[in-house]
Length: 265
Length: 265
Image 1 (cartoon, helix red, strand yellow):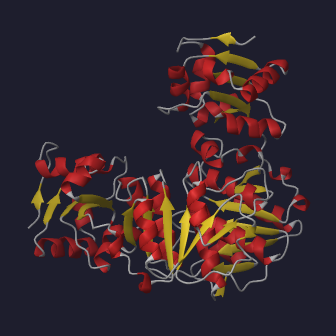
Image 2: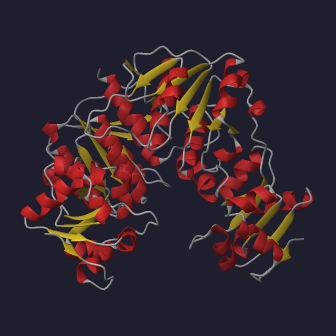
Image 3: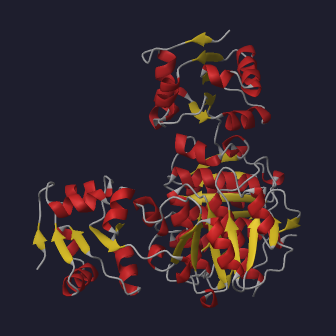
């Protein structure tokens, strides 16, 4: 049976609240997901939370009740609590009625099975967790195998990242690696590294993309470092019609990924 | 000569700070843009601010100095102030060194000259100002004429919207209208209304898009209302490979807009 907790000072409440902070996520090995949609996505991917917190109203939803029961049956902790406590956990005025903490998966490159998908997205020094979450969501939609985060990226398991991923945090494989580790790993198997660059001469529409394709997206402000560009097997540009010289990083990833997928049809 | 102001209580400082609030933007008819890049974009589009505030460091940049002088020559107000005051204005810990207030343009549909571009983006009930700004940025890059905001959208002139637009707030024509006004306006001239829908049967890659194209993007949560979909001349779907059933609204707009542009080449 779920416990009822209404004290902000309760240790489980404090633990869940702490997970908005990266250090706590790392030391606890947990991350937060909010809302029935995300939690159902996780369950459909075979994942149950370690801890699930919900309002009385939230637990009345049949799907929520089912996941709460499954979480307890698997040895997880289920707590019924008040909307204002859920609000503090999520940092939102209108909190979801269900919030859950999941074990953070490993993010080693060894997890990437390049034979399992013909398209992988690689992001370098991406600083906005919302962009990372949006790229995960796009990756899921476009049928990418996962996202490789190179160098110092924002945390995909942050509340903002998980939120923007709309459940794709549970369906996309995520790996993190410094460039020095990524590049030898990439060259240890099949795969074309495709970068986008403002200085490239090849139009992205005219290129012939090989599989598996590793689509490399650079930092929001600087784009890709010149020496990373030189390592690309193919460097293309998305022509810009207006005054601006760039796209939002998550938008550029999506335009490229959907075009590459379309070019294979 | 610029005035030096170091008091939070100064009326111009208070006015600039107030512009983070929609009501104040409306009553003052002004909006904020931050950073030299945006302000240079505005100047290149023939727009100078009504008020420009900058740090001593900011004014040492030659381009900033030029715009500050031009603003004063045009009768605008230039104030040198402290980084902590700039920080309060922008609501950011690391404020830009230049912040400026511009007159809000008219946003009537009559501003849209459909002969001036073959592609227009139409967003309905979009609630996230970051999405609106990102769509403006995408519109600039893809060569759209502008953005028509239908029904109750977030404010494109909000700080978040302007920031995400990366200067495109100054280059894209923006119109706002309720659907009841937009539809007769649209039907009063040439133009194909293209909507995306999960329930459409036509693949977005197989369609033949006519010009000018009005690309209609629906609300982040609900998508387009069914009766709005019925008014579309063409309804297409972006096939989803993964578990998720949707894309971020700004991502969907970009994938469609770049594909439509590509299909005309």
